[in-house]
Length: 117
Length: 113
Image (cartoon, rainbow over all chains, first blue to last red; front, side):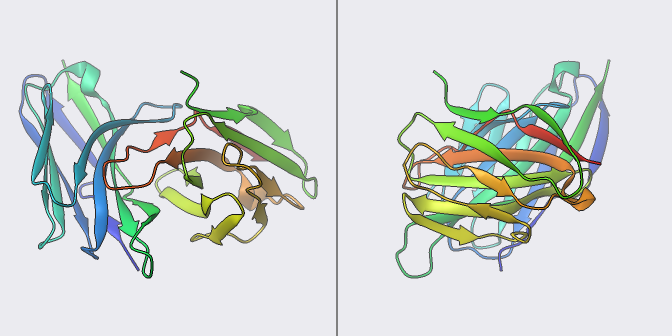
């Protein structure tokens, strides 16, 4: 059974700091890994998607890396801003056992980030 | 640009009542999912579907039912609502393949009293 872990559950940093959010998963047979942002009371917004054959993806101040062999991904946020305050969730899309197609999307519990002005 | 649409946004049910949470997507995605999110517990998969006519249980299916008669729609049925089903419910969809971003609806906040 795939398990996705995000530690710590919460993080508070001063504005301007570069920070790294960690995600680990137990089964490396994944199609891709995605990082999402969730603001309080809102739905999830996709930030970055890394295919299983890729090592990293970048979007603006965000950079996500993937190491399938060790079951780890990191989301790097450069020059953090108060507007980055939100919960960040990672999720993996698993390969179906027999067809090789993508099947379940499994989430970590998220990291709640607070960026202090 | 509708994406994934969930209705209703909020609902209060009495214990024992039934209701259907609606989810529709206009991106022709094969895969659809229902999650519930409880404080501090992350998102737990209730049911998912890999195509019309095909559904499978997730981690927490008890007390729920789904159907997938069309590619667009994936309703979630709650029979005999219980306080333990108080939660925020999210519907999501993805296309097939490794470069397929997941899209989420805005959620349904359900309270069972």
